[in-house]
Length: 595
Image (cartoon, rainbow, N blue to C red; front, side, top):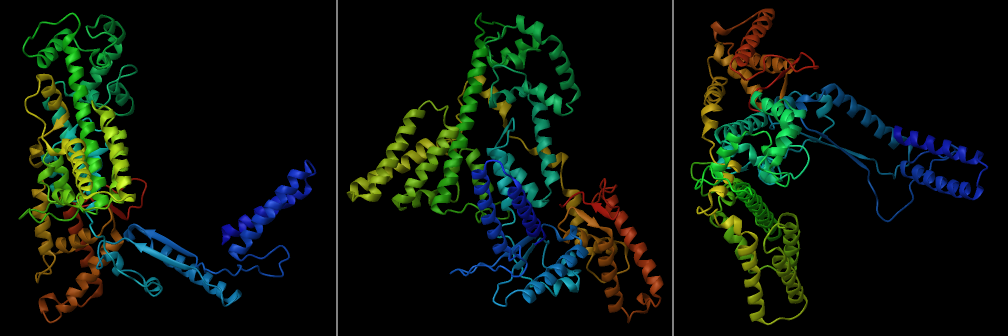
């Protein structure tokens, strides 16, 4: 309402300014009429007083009643101030009551709604809401249908859209998904990705050329130099950059890879010995013998182009498969019932099998083929348009690109004809067969057949550079056994009869830690929850003389001591960061794991 009044004053001042203008009267008159219309519409919408102040302009009577509403989203209730929340509700209640008293009784008042994010219905932040807040709210609990779908989307985006120098194998995708299912921590996910990239580039010689596969530069500056300008690179890479910038101009003129080669910028600072090593890997049958026309460089560029085309073909196939599932209403999310003893999502299963070229064994693929045989022609026409869009994005480098584009156009015309005209049964059967054949043999063939093993040494070398197949180092270097064992022990320690033990206090503090959804924890709220739980336990243990405490001062001091002891233990075990977040209140502590 305050903003509406401010805008009304702006309209009035602008109207007064136009009345004083005497230049180009025709334009001024038109502008005055426009401003008056907008001001009248604004005053009618917000029920503001007109210039005379004697009457209140109400909304015109229309056939449909519009009820204004305001929806506010609080992502984490733990991080939101209760005082601000309560004051806002008080102001809103007063405003609505005032509007109802000063306006016509027939008017419809606005509605206010909240979407509040908590870990569960028993979240500590929700239990400690002030009565002034809860009395004004009608709480309706709901949960996400699939809380892991967000991670599935992230994993699919890493494979499909991320500008990573590597492509993942199915086993690596499964390993990443299993780790995130055990500990849903985004920092841990990023740490695992960094570790995989580090081990791969350290293991494979010349693997930095995987950066050249995605988009071979023919001119301009090397991407490695651009990365060195925006981030600190390892010592070895920094030395390479210095040597590269010092000798680029002089050595590029003497290179066997001339300026017409796309690999010039990537190999400019390599010595003759290093180039002979790369040549022996590209063409192992004749090491040390270099043709005058730089034959090995051409072979390497051809292998890189083939790898880039293979990746584009796979992305096109996955986009077509996903759009087909969407059109046919085939869900590939949820739990995989066939995985006994394991918790693997269907989305992860399908993505991993597609990366391995075994999508035909996926649980939902045969259902997709079955529905393709019975779906309506209008649905088929929409699917073909999506396929053509995916082909234009990813399939431009196909050898038979024009042929596939023509085939899709012909299928679209035939399906449009079958939808509008009566067609013989034999024609419909043949059309559906052709439709399914194009889908399986031309669009998603890269997802149904593994990469052939009988490839040239150059192709195998480029695949070794660009494909990440080993994730065993994750469990060895970034295992969760330590925190898994601690978590299981602390969950059981917080509930029991030995209420005075050190382990019980740590377990009780850990329950608050686990139930809080935010990355930051308030010490005040944590202490209040800890103290209330201990007091409840003390009340239930009144009959025991060894646990009876009569002095409230002794109780408060004992609770504070036990809370500090439990907090220090959690920090020592690696659940909390040792320092508070920068530029924030010292009341907050930041989680280290289980975010």
